[in-house]
Length: 416
Image 1 (cartoon, rainbow, N blue to C red):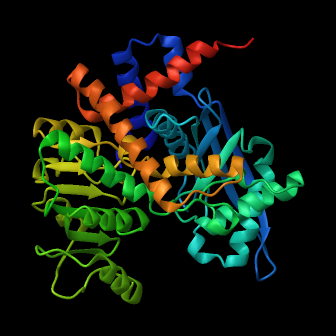
Image 2 (image 1 turned 60 degrees about the vertical axis):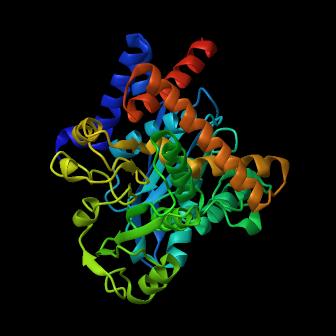
């Protein structure tokens, strides 16, 4: 990855653009460009074989002017402070765009979780929480799942925090199992949110979704749930991929059956009556909607001109580089940016937090209805700025998010 395309330099350049468009003064820009707090801890745990190993843990809290910090925790070998800082910043804008009362945070542990046993992962998680517990809490910082963490991880986090405080506090983490206060619809939320944005964009762009072809790069939770939601509204999913490669079938895929094939063979490739393709080839397929839901920097200046989709909806964080953004905009391809398109997860996390505070559990239908309402409102709020500024959607989304946070800071003032 070139230096200018590290997550942090991209995030900083996006903030600079939004600040200029909004006319923010240099002081406000400096404040927003730095996190309020960056925490680094050494996590020493006893492994199953009796030895002691040490892992590096991070938590970055960007801004909380609109509410407590909120953001995922990822377990990944190559995680860096710069990457986590960038993701925390994007979470701040994402929460503001969705108009939910949270600020942005992100965290992680440098570990290959696949090499640890379940008991080792539990000890690692609980130790990590114990080291940063004074900075966490339902009104300070609320963790959620991210890469290679899940509902079980959040259960350990919530339980550890509760044990240290002396009473059960389900609202201290979101993305938990429903048995202990998790929300119905949380697992599906990010993927469904992407499709809610596609649906709204189709209204504004004259794209008929009945029979529309969809290609999805990434067949993890977000990609799979987006595929299911796309089929629910009448779209035809013609291609999906995972880390091993992809499959293409012009007549459409049976998504649950593809998942069963992947679980059996550990790859989507080799699925019946399909053509095996690479991840790069999937991006360049002729289709109506392209959903990059895998890794960052997938659409670049090298392949952006080969994109044939009418619409790109970013399920992953940062799948499109700044140069590619410009190329797609010039090609009049509608691009729904990550900070809008994949905000369904944090939106339902907010719903879970509210349910926990009041000790309620909403039915799935209610959660899904509220999610669609929130996503539709956020999309239309961004579109209003796009129309006024005659800008691309990423710029409009950044202006909305950064502007709301800056306004909150201005109203609060600086203490002392």
